[in-house]
Length: 145
View (cartoon, one colour):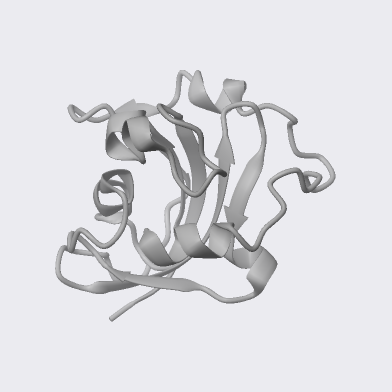
């Protein structure tokens, strides 16, 4: 997610959350309805989608918002009004995204809880994402090409 990480530097990580949103993502991380993958990724479909399925090698077009567990929003394509595109399974984004977006259908929305080893690990990212951070994303699959 190199492009998204660069874009994260343009966002104020202390930006207030939208009305009705939780100040902490702890409940999302501990949601008993999350599906746990063998890799450690956890996910929950918030809306199933009915369009084309995202598969390895295809380009996924997504809107997303990412938070730290403490509720700090660090990036959002919605705030920029510009979806993000990446090749699924191509290693251009964090491993949690490559795994978590695969299998989604266009129109679907999924919550991803990404452990540090599938995110930015011990290095963190850009001063915005601390080392060993668990990340929470809500991702909507807009298109697949």
